[in-house]
Length: 324
Image 1 (cartoon, rainbow, N blue to C red):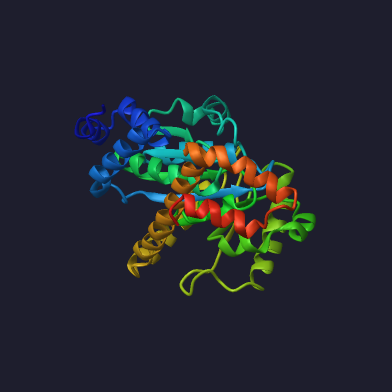
Image 2: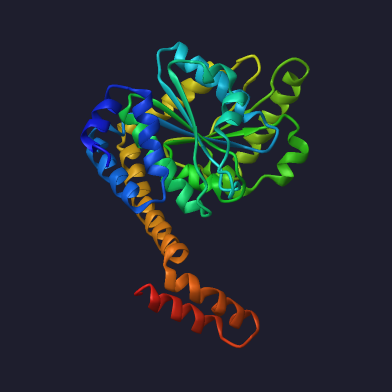
């Protein structure tokens, strides 16, 4: 049995072992562990919410890890404490690799002011996002004032990360000509800033040209807010060039939105979505672990697949078993 009060006090003192233990508790599927994790987060809740939460996404090969490593190192150099969390709904078996993340972010991995943690995959994006949110709150309670949430999956993971954070950064490659055709409009509409990476050496000219094209493309879309027009910057995760401007834009966004009370409003909306994500996760857990349902579902699937039973009838039977 975990002493929630003692564990919470250790986290507030910034003890890494306590933080790691608490995150493992939050990630557990055991009912007693989940209950203890909920009690711990409720206990720590007044000490959370003070960090700048930044979501980061980008196409494969854009250099997310290199950029996060460089940005995080720049921020710790300014005196910030940085936590890096990864949302990976694509890894249903392993949920990501701590060793892999630390290998990709070599400087942050050994930085005493940084903490790297991947989210576990629970088979549903809502579950992954819920666990990431719990981890984020625990990191905030431990004193981390910048939370970088990286999406390493595809598809809806971008939306999930945008729903976890205050600021959504989209990284792009310099070869804008082809990439502009393949940009998902929904992701661009979520972006609070676009950063064209690899603006170093021979790529600098191409990056500037790409940035101009992205800026032109943004004019077609409605702005994400009446008080913020999505900027486009060029950076190099490899050399660190442009990261000071990138961070200045993030701070400017926070200053503007806090002054209007929009950060708090956004987080309240996110909390409601979190509630529904956790409810969905618990329903999924019931489906996975209820003995009667586990025994009955294969027969229902077979009957529906064979055309012997209507999908609506099967769904009704499962819903009744869940008490719905």
